[in-house]
Image (cartoon, rainbow, N blue to C red):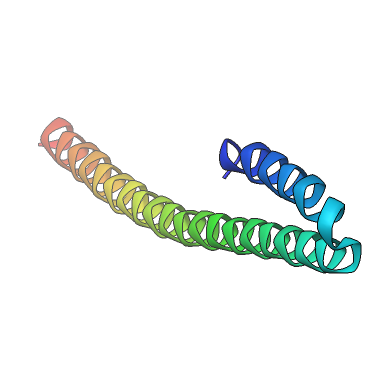
Length: 95
């Protein structure tokens, strides 16, 4: 969108110059329509971009939640293993 907008603007200005020599009122309405369509296209492009970013942020948040759940599970297993090793060591030392 950022590369096509300047070209469309230049085209609208060039067309208005040609048309204004013949019919000034028609030229003004044509230019305003062209520029409003450029604005609508820009708004749609921004909305599509923002929607994609929101979707990516949600997926990233879900991924981070999965990683946190994995880390919690690994920590739980690690503590269970450490407690088991300590209990076995204590039992072996006392016998």
